[in-house]
Length: 303
Ligand SMILES: [Fe+2]
Ligand SMILES: [Fe+2]
Image 1 (cartoon, rainbow, N blue to C red):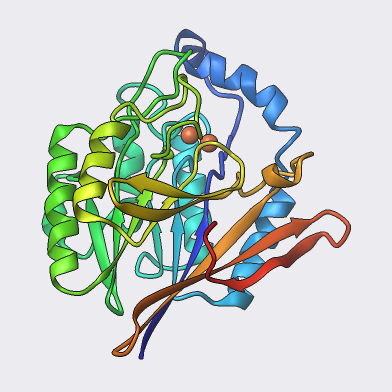
Image 2: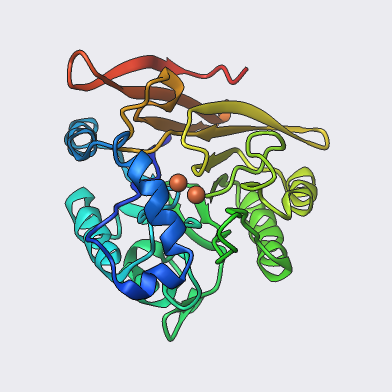
């Protein structure tokens, strides 16, 4: 029997310092104005409580599906790096970038270098001179965890994401190879790949091309962030039905329960008789208890 437990959290949106006057000339001005509203919804204490709770749950791997920072500034990249180190070393924590991490052109390279160990896969050849060629993948106990990059700077009114043809082609090969080796495949993607989960301003631009690959190759689980609310559905890709989960922003107090901070645990187990099985569990922040509680015990129903 082979087993792996993965914890999934997302969207720290760390926002540090007042920024510089140069920021007023970029999209960061818009992000800073939006932060005046968001900062009242996010509480650092909730994030600290989540980190404590994660320590008690002790998953094998922690994955974070993007937007570690809010404005993609150097101070934020450093703060995120420190936070990642409190969660664990790069072997225990895997992250992907979100649109807020690559908020303005030219800034993301510094973040990529600072977070390199947490962003990378098992194969060192994926990273050359600080550039990472996505997808990246890590294999743990027969489960292949594949990280995608949808983050690219967009004008201030857009928060869309794009995979691009090269990344999609490599993903196609990676999914096929992992299936050939009998591995369960988990995809990490910041923008949800399901139509209607994000509006036109926030959607994944090449979701149809991704759906074609998923229809052909399949995947056992897809995890996303970006929309700052709980989501759970089955992605219909050809004949396949693939479980898709999203979690709210990690520090969100959230007036609505689906927008309140939570993280999920996913447990893969393999046996000769049954093959791969997947169960999931939700831990959500309780305002009255000022801590995390189990909302859904281990469950294998995806509808
Ligand atoms: Fe976000
Ligand atoms: Fe996002």
